[in-house]
Image (cartoon, rainbow, N blue to C red; front, top):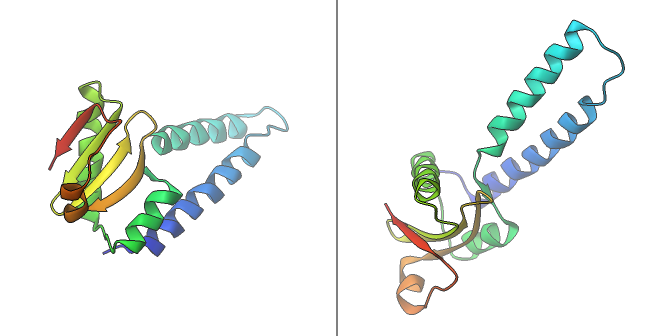
Length: 133
């Protein structure tokens, strides 16, 4: 199981990788190695654009509400993003067992997290779709 701290570390690592990619894109000359490096950087950037991100707010809510995700659950959330995107959903409620997530499908970002009990007690607005897993 990954804790909120693990996810925070993953987010920090992504930011560091992003800085490294940005600094390595400053081409100092042209040769086949530089072209190869650019291709690798481009492929890495494409892969990262498909990754689900957790906002700072979502990570704080996950910690305060003791919402934890294992690898299987993260994969299910990724599938929910793909399904919602295919249906044209922009902002979704993703229900996964006793956990709920408000997500910006377009930005591939989990905005906030809630528990099943909080879902029952609240009205959820500003979504145009729901994915129940």
